[in-house]
Image 1 (cartoon, rainbow, N blue to C red):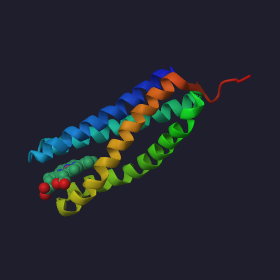
Image 2: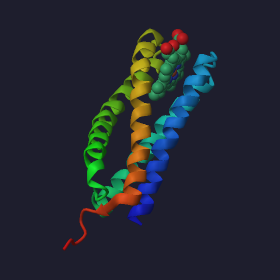
Image 3: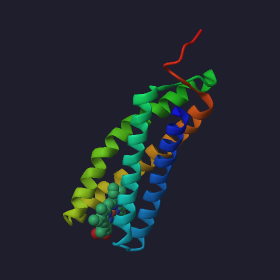
Length: 145
Ligand code: HEM
């Protein structure tokens, strides 16, 4: 069950990244109707990711990396940058949506240029971390000999 929740969370964060890319394509084409719709969908998917992630965390605890030793450093670098940027992404997205809804697109645009790459990094690394733990993860709460 813990694995399933983790898989669902990884899928949701990956899908939110796809929705962001589609949202950017819409605004590049000048579509001011479907751009907000797609970005709000991406936000909902990211929020759902958080729900599933926290549910997994609360019910099953964290998952430890038990894969090849030579990949350990790279894995933790990915995990730390993912977590820090994910925490930063939350307030950035709230700020972006707030300014967009107020019609302040002169503020929305420059912040959006920073937020989109951060979001895509978080989504991609979240998906990769989920994939890595699927193969090389072990419940941190399990008994070890
Ligand atoms: C988290 C959600 C959002 C993200 C990541 C996002 C991202 C972006 C990006 C990357 C651009 C293009 C900036 C550029 O030209 O370089 C943009 C422009 C724009 N966004 Fe968003 N957006 C979001 C939510 C919204 C919402 C909710 C609305 C509407 C209520 C909106 C309306 C617009 C409009 C109208 C533009 C064009 C502004 C202009 O060209 O003057 N966006 N957004």
